[in-house]
Image (cartoon, rainbow, N blue to C red; front, top):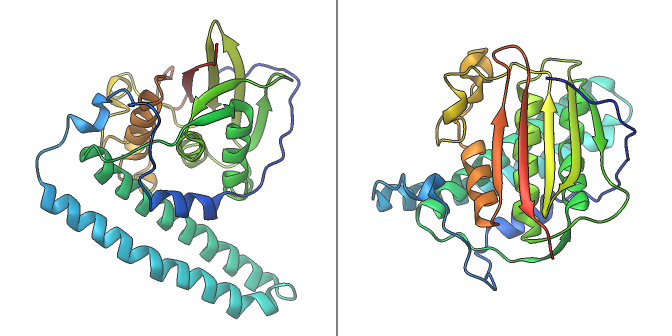
Length: 275
C-alpha cells in the first residue's frame, strides 16, 4: 500500500484495559435504537444453548486469567528490574494473557450480537481521542514487533456520537490485525480526516495483504485475513466481523482494500459526524 508523507500528530492517552473489562460485562442502555446490522445477526443458527454455554465458559475463564496476571506481577515484579531475562518473561506472559482476554471478550461479543443483546451507551466523542486510546492499548504489541507507526490527524476535534468503549474496540481490532499480519519492522499508518459529513479513519499497513478472492468476504464471521499467509498467524476470524457490526450499529461503514497478497492492506472506517 502507498503511505502518504504528512506531518504527524502525537497523542497522549490513558490505558483503558480495565475499563474494557468492566464494560464488556454489562449490556449498556442506548438512548436511540441502533440500526440493525446484518453482519453477525443473520448468521444466527438458533443454537441458543451452545451460545449460552460459550458465554458461560468465557466468563469463567476471565477470572483465572486475571489471577494469573496478578500472580505473575507479584512473583516477578520484585526481581524484574534487576534481571533482564525476567523482564522479558514477564512481558511475554503479560502480552499473551492480554491476547487471551481480548479473544474471550470477542467471543462474548459474538454471542451477544447473535442474540441481539448488545447495547450501546452513546455520548459525544472526539474521534481523534478514540483512535489515540486504541493506539495506547496496542502500543506495547506494536513496539514488540518493531513496527513504524505514524498518525496524521487534524488539529481540531472531530465530533461523533457513539459508545466510547465499542468504538475503541473497533480500532483496537483493526490495529491488532495490522500488527499481526505485518512483518517485523513494517509500517502502519493512521490517517484521520473529514469527508463531507463523515469522520474517516484510514489504517494502512505494509503487511501480507488480502487476495482478490478473499477480499469480498473479509468481514464475514470465521474468515481470516491470515488465510493468505502463514498458518502460524491464523486466528478464529471473528475480529473483523465484530468491527463491521459495531461500525454499522453506529450508523457508519467500514471497507477493506488491498492490491493483493504481500502488498499490504487498508481499512477505512466512516462515521457520521455531529451536524
